[in-house]
Length: 388
Figure (tube, rainbow, N blue to C red):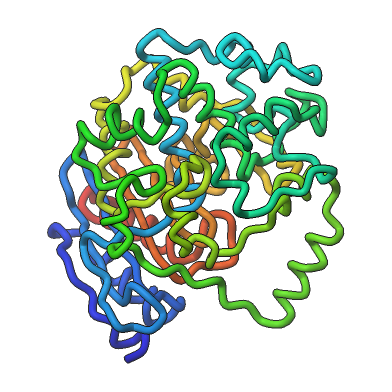
């Protein structure tokens, strides 16, 4: 079997047939292996699709409960945890991190506010290259948080945004842990996933879930693309190298059981598309955060060119905004977070829309993978047709 004959299952509400067409086209035309996509409107499921295979051997089909590691789509879930604490009056994003995490004050970081963690402006996008980090060390929470607490800023905090590709999870997650008195995995399970019945966790809490996980496949790259990427990494400055290459991860690392079990709130959330859409749906409809807290979470922190990725960004507090790229639909104030290789979760409260997308054949992009954009655009095409 090939992409043209992948089995697609699930349902679309009347009028949302273009989404199924786009989902099927991803298998025929865009290299999809296995995937799921769910969209909600006003909290009700209007699209719930899955198809293809859970691994490159094509021995098992993707199921509704197949879990996928969603890389940086996890960051949005981590941001939600911080905002839950804001809602509870236990966290002030304009208070220095050191109030909650005293060790973070080291090396000139005493005045860095929590806001700058959420917006990738802390000056600590990673561990400096003078202290090489092995992949296995990422699984040690105490080690990683202590290294980041001791790290001297790699640029002046607050002066620029530099994507905290790995560091974001430990930085925000440790603030959550210090305030809540429990790991962010436990906090997320109790405060977010559990009440919503959402099948999503920050690292797998049970080995029983290992058998449900899709096998991730590294991006298919031409020799030209691979050479260009290698050249870009070699030419990157120390800030980008600290953020992206210390250590340098590849998609297949996420298939290791130790990686899946660890608590890495920037990169190893495991869930279903339905769970992601459900969580963002609770944001879109006001069921997860208060209106004032959500408004602050969506408030633009300004447009910029990211110092690590070299891409134009517009951040809310922990979420990408749709901005000029319209990455979450035509509403520039829609928000969410993409993951390496294509996964996403997003919400558009003004239109009552939320969605989640999981996959296992990774693409080469950090965000706005063509498969994701085809699906999101099809959702809004369906909406436009119904309102004419």
